[in-house]
Length: 188
Image (cartoon, rainbow, N blue to C red; front, side, top):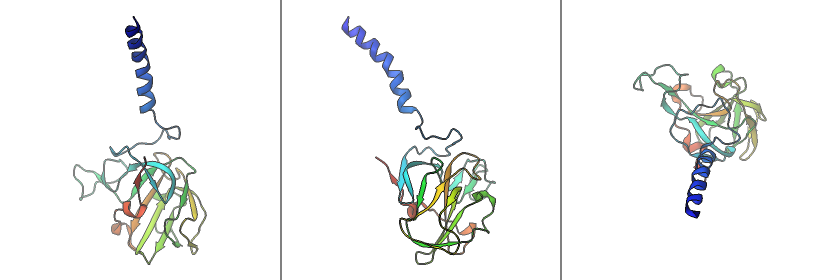
């Protein structure tokens, strides 16, 4: 009799356990759509917490990009990495640099993107979809400085930040994988 009760209890508890393990985190934005099978949550010196990649660098099925000749099956090309995070998540400078005008970027990055130039390391970093920025064009930023907050500004699929690494003064065609610059580390 005890084994029957134990089995019935296990059967009753199992669906609750599975639902709990598969449930989205409490800070999930219902508009998030992930265009990657990677479910890993990553930490980075650039932002607080551990978060998932929504759209990786390169060819993607995300519907926001025109077909690109580099990609098969009429896929578009994403020039950065989008990382899903709660609106208001703090963004910190991993390296120093100078904030430069973002006028050349256009509306796809939101109303208030950041463009950070680090001539010493040889890159410009575009950070899109920020809510509030704490450093403005002409100002120097320093390692560890709080520079912005995440937002959904200009983002049709919820709160996230877009990180795009380009050559110094380079255009979109100079974008390269930003993963190493971001220092993404799988959380434990």
